Image 1 (cartoon, rainbow, N blue to C red):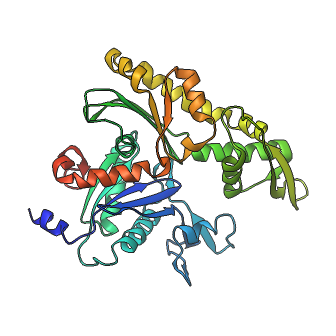
Image 2 (image 1 turned 135 degrees about the vertical axis):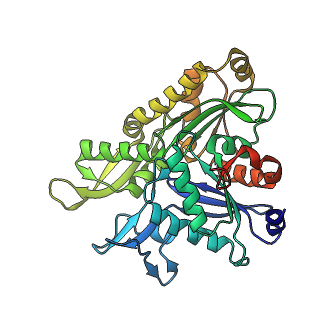
Image 3 (image 1 turned 90 degrees about the vertical axis):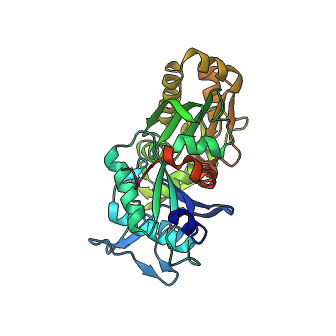
Length: 350
């Protein structure tokens, strides 16, 4: 009862703690923060770098990726959807929470955080501890496919099958849901980051050209695809020559980038097929009509819905604003927290 009373004075929030980006949604306000999950620190320490614009977290830190001098490191503290650096994650969460709750400094927020479906109890504990140390009053964990389904507007609480494919930066979550719970799911650590790595490997192998993560991501966004395009494209790419060590540029085509992306795209398609094969017959029957919903930044890869449609034979749709589906889902869950919180793992029951 006391916690409920405090809720009227705190800014409760839902957090999509992603490998690439962290999004924060506040109850009644929608998405209020969307920043890269990057922190710049002084090398050899966990001391967050201070700049003229404040702590080097989020956008400020992302601009430093691949460009830092020897004394500074730009770190992404989450890998494959889970915390790889506990202290840096805590500093990042603390910065984001303080940025959102600036007007309610004295009462910590209740926080719903989305987590990948396949993480361990130790990894869950790390998320809760990081949020608690960052200033959260209470922390609740919500599985990403459930959050994505809610954010995409699927009828996941009804007695019919809903299928979501959420492709983030570090993991792809595939789940079939019914009656507000997951019937079957699979979490694979192949997603947007692996697509970027495949492009980096292709540039190195084909052109002897070393490019950074941000350049690889830009190539993926501008000319990347999973199936043939109506009109193929080219792009000029700059990097460092692996033989001479000097800056150089090369022109790449969308056809060769599609070939480079085939391995991660195939891995995602196979995860979808495995999940469908495990579905109960009645749920599988529902999916013939309901189809598959795609969410997450990776779902924006051109032609990916067509690839999944071809491999499964089901209708594949892209959610409205797929990048924010999970964050919006946590915010909706937050609005029903008093009713639903007993179904979530939290710092109260771990």
